[in-house]
Length: 209
Image (cartoon, rainbow, N blue to C red; front, side, top):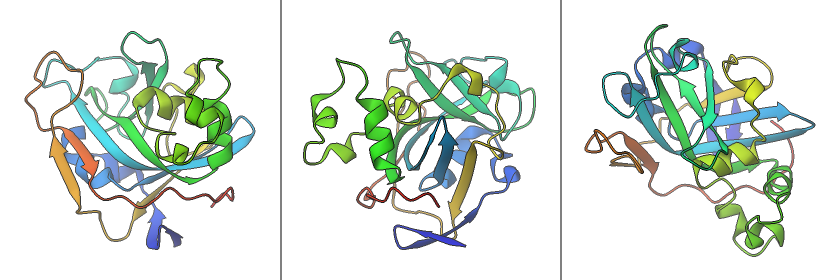
């Protein structure tokens, strides 16, 4: 048992992800994803997620997306070329995953800010650590990828092994706003986007759990 944001958390078991993404999605809000990667430890509480599944037209259908629940699907997001990260759900052979759209810093704030500041064109608020910068640190799929320093080598990695740790809240988050996915050209009507309506403030601890 461990505490984040004054809530009790436990390590997640792989079968938590065994159902298709659109069923798993709302239960994943508030999950804490931690990484010890490339010389730094950092963690985000997942606050906005979107589901993609082979039963609709916006899914990528990549081989990695079909590995079965508990794997990581890393891919370029939109036309930016920057990397985003999905959590694969459902049985092997079924293309089903959750795109991490936003996260709330749990620990490793400075490590994530440093990663987000390396590009000369990086957001000035983050480069200068302006007031409130932590709220935008992992806002958007590419920013999540950059904060975690996601690399192509992680595509297909097992989420329940190094460098990852995944914690689920003992009491599920129920304060969730349901909506439609962003930047989707087909099947845009599906209510497959979940947002933590009133999330806690980002934590400033640099200590790994």
